Length: 120
Image (cartoon, rainbow, N blue to C red; front, side, top):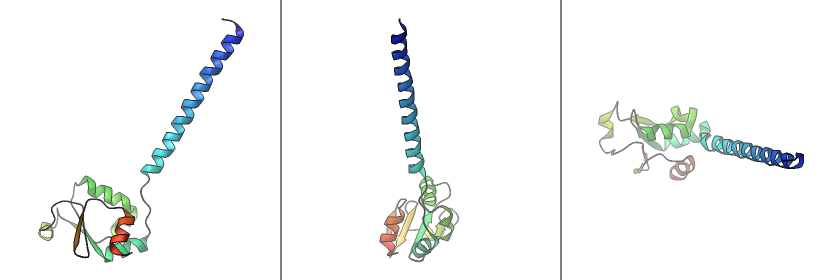
């Protein structure tokens, strides 16, 4: 293999490595953006809380997902934990469940959906 062929081969290897590196960086950035919890402000959370009840249960993975949607504002919600207060959960068949305007909404909800349902 002469010098010119070796340089071409090295150039192709280097190009491939750089391309893979760029793709890995892009994938990492996309994953970080997608995993970032939603940001919701205190005023919106308090509005949602004043118009709803959130039923959760200790150990519920979907409840944890709902908690992550609100981040630090989660504590401002009107929450009933069915593990600790089962008497208040007679009509709740699964958690998380939102009660908004007398209607049940099962499963974790987005901030936008909750704003729409509560009128916030």
